[in-house]
Length: 179
Image: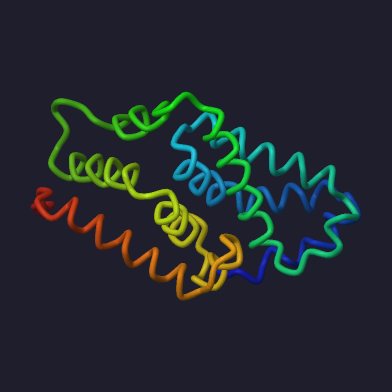
């Protein structure tokens, strides 16, 4: 995914064109949901965070005129919404449900590795998990991640690198796919 689009929709959003909102949703909703899920760790809360952002976009109307990078703006908004929702959750709610959501007793080794990866991601520090979500789920470059997080591109890249190292360590003993 590139960061330039969906800026072509900005004029329609400012004008209140429902088609622009629908197009923006179609383009970004899966990535926004994945990003919110990585942050809030609850599917229901992640879906609500994305909905919060789209409601705020509709309400913003003409206020969106000053937005220079719509993609970064929307991802920053979903990050803030997910963080707010995470702060309102009872401690640990979402973590266990997310980490165990695909676990079964008779899961094949590849599925077990996916569950281990999910659990490892849940245990990353927030700032590392956020940059992984923005980069992997959101398709943002490190410069885009930096804009969303309010840090330098080097800091975003470092957080990502540290996260990947932790994930590798967590998965080093995971069974490999036989195919």
